Amino acid sequence: MRATTAVLMLSLSACTAPPAEVAQRLAEALQAGDPAAVLVHVDPDYADPQGARDQLQRDLEAMQRDFERRTVRFEDLSMASGASAREATLTGRLNAELVGQTTWKVVGPVQLDMFKEDAFRVRSGLLPHLRNIRALMSRRVAALEANDARALEPLLHPNYRDGDRTADEVIQRLSQDLSGIKIRIQVSNYRLEVRGPIAHLDEHYRLTVGDRTLPPQIGRFTLERSAGLWLIRAGLSSGTGGESP
Image (cartoon, rainbow, N blue to C red; front, side, top):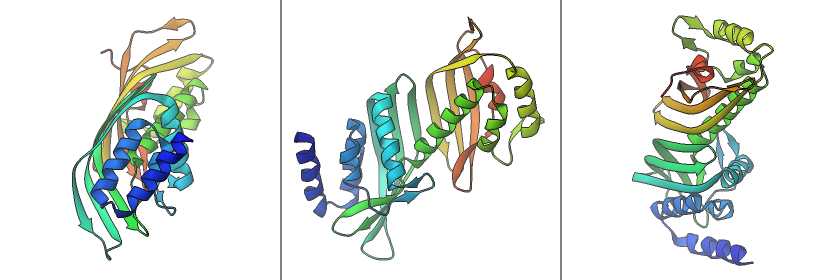
């Protein structure tokens, strides 16, 4: 009952909030791990490359489950008006740390596209990079632990290269390496930096092969967007036997 009342109060107070204040309230709700309070400020027609509002809700609920502490800041925001007084875009920088069994530290750009009916709400741009890359790396780990190198193919950028090796060569090598071997990957933390169309991701992990757990290692990945989604452009081999820290 108390949570419902809090969401109602947020909804009522949002009616007069300017875009910058809405962004601040979004950051506070994200930091509190409160999907309902976040969704107060999300437009019914929300969409981004990850999907519509229902997908955003599922991602927010997963973040609530997976992280016990969150620091989320939208920094250096500037506003540009849209084609009408009902549209606005805030651009700036995301600085976030999400602490859980697997911790994420993220820096990168922010672009919150807002639309006003009774109040300004976000119509696109709410943590799309983080949400996309979390899903991408989860699918990668699942494929490796299932000994299914071919399941990695949809995760690779069309221009994927590891040094002189093409995507097909890397997949073929991984298929041989994974054949008949039980592996588990325990990731302690990710460090993600998004720079325009390119992102750099460090994965700190321990690899267990059969009954043997190897020393901590670091996988270093380069990611690039294709058709709006982040894919792995380099570094796949490093995630199954990378560099010791």
